[in-house]
Image (tube, one colour):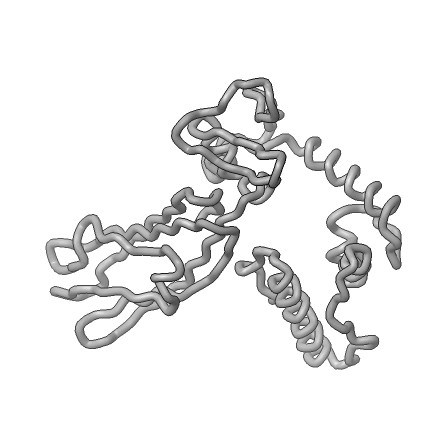
Length: 254
């Protein structure tokens, strides 16, 4: 589901297509505690498929009151306990960077309030942007894109131009080399961090006074064993970052 601000509903639509059943009634269940995680399923067309109804729509929605990310399994099953399962991922966060796509899509429908005392960031979906001269997003401040209209339709908003991202990556590259003691200089962000294994990410974690998981000094020379060792290392790093509060529930090591 789309990443959303706190207390804003994320919603996704599924289509269930009948494949040969004369009559079938579906039910659902999550493998998580829906009393703790506010996720639900709606059946606007009912939950029965048959000869006269070949498809039905299902809506999955989630509202998060705290910064939180999770992946759960949603099971659909019939009266004979035949089941079908899909993974459902959702993230709610109190961060402009995480909610970049949502802000683009809902620019005219929301307001950002910055509370300096506790650095709390509030999104007011109903009121529109408050023009009080304080910190706010300026209408038309985003840079137009040279990408095709098809890209805009896929994202749901007009993406920024390529040179904007390139300029940002150059700034991050310079900042990392000037402020972080890297084992290897970063020449091109983020590609160097990907191509050089995890060493530069570990350098950044040490700079932030975080002791990263142990890294194997030498990988096996056998390709299959090397892949397994690398995946294990990536899994340990992802688990470590999740424990520190990173919303990486959708990130996999393979």
